[in-house]
Image 1 (cartoon, protein in one colour):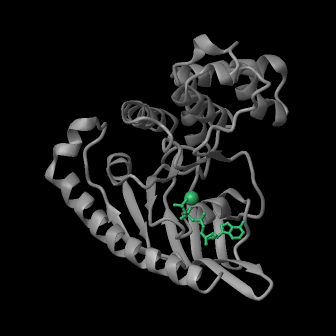
Image 2 (cartoon, rainbow, N blue to C red):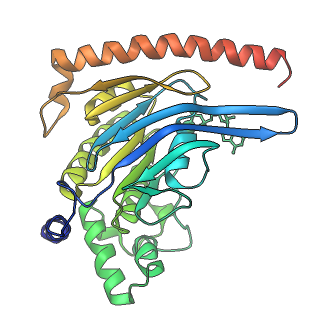
Length: 289
Ligand SMILES: Nc1ncnc2c1ncn2[C@@H]1O[C@H](COP(=O)(O)OP(=O)(O)OP(=O)(O)O)[C@@H](O)[C@H]1O
Ligand SMILES: [Mg+2]
């Protein structure tokens, strides 16, 4: 999309701008996130550090309940760390902001607004006029292949189409970081595969940082520059696996030895941590927590 390329090039041309895209370096230094209830402290994320470069695509894997969503919500600014430092482009994260776009597992569109109005929402909130907001919204609807559905209401679209509108809505704020929490988890296998490929195309075009949570190991290895694996609760990052597969990628890369090798490492770690997580849940239940 020429407009997006132009935006990216303009931003790159600014003094001090990062080499790729328009910022989006995410750093966590010894971040602990605990939820306190009377008489009980639930440490969801423990002394976790990560450093995601601007424009990098990082997937986060880990057993259920290990703190993936909590860590992502902290980057989004919905949850505050109890200790440690969390920054995006050197700025401490203290609240949600348009530069950090979020896409959830279940589509979270406004059902009373048309597709176009849903995507216009962010630009309007950011102070754009009607004409500019509509033009931005149409650009991003075009990017996700849904320009023909601008006047439809979300409930008339399939789950996959609604997720694409959700992605367009997040991108319309020009985020430097796109946070995706199991965004394709509710989709059928064929739609999921198509969404993965189209997300990689969008990412290549938009040059944003992506932090992507999934339970699907194939999905993580297919998409990522790097896969981070979290331990059972309290969540810590126990593996940082680079994925040196060529780009652009299509499903053929899943047949390469490098893919299998990273997949196997992830499978072994997830199996081991899931066993720990199941045992923890059994003990918590037994203790009546
Ligand atoms: N708002 C909250 N208040 C209290 N506890 C919370 C809150 N959010 C998460 N937790 C707890 O933090 C821990 C981690 O939860 P989180 O949702 O981050 O896990 P997850 O890795 O995303 O799991 P899943 O794979 O099932 O989505 C859990 O013990 C959960 O109960
Ligand atoms: Mg989660």
